[in-house]
Length: 313
Figure: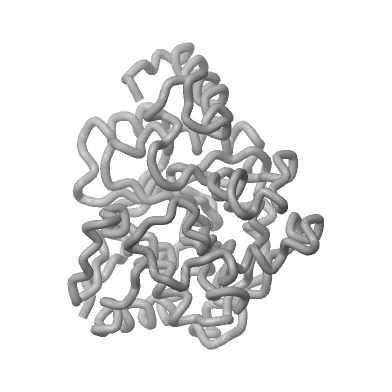
């Protein structure tokens, strides 16, 4: 049986609806801090809770505490059968992104990757209709997410042969870009896989048990993309597909889906893959979209300096 990932401490927040983000080390901490700042900058009514594992170091805790960002301990989640992610080590951490389904002390959790930046208020996701926990994962709206882009624009050789533009859900929307700003393609479009970077969840013990049960099966060896492969398989066609604007994958802007992308419609940028904006130098970034991150980060740092926080993050 897979190791459970039930939270062992409470974040101590009064809100029953929260944003969460997983943090296992300090490599993504600067991203988390700027994500938190961006949510507040755009007036979100809901707190961001940092879900930390045992590997998160003391200096990381000190940084969160200094900024009064609530945090909650979760156990590191792995399938019972080892999956080799040598070509993409980031996926070892991704199983733990299934943890929000277990956080039943909340009515709604919107999980965000720490390498995201909010460009607009997204509080409407806290009220998006989803199946009630009592549906036990059997209903048609188990969770919500945007589609994964399966175009493989970087031509990574270890990606499945099926990951081509013709099989991408976003390709199916090319004929009507205005509609793609407001609605996602059906959850069964393309390969029918959600991107795990943003997940809207009504936590449910029954749904989480289904996830844990699947994690104990040998077929997890076939899940090339960890959490999102599992969700696509376990809840095929029974999730709500959000428009790309809530999880705007940076690669879409200049790749096969540039026909869909509208800078002024994007609510949340996802700086997936390496490098991250904070790994580069402002004004000399490898991609124009990385420059979007820097003014918000600089604004955060200036605000923190006024409050006496200068810890290098």
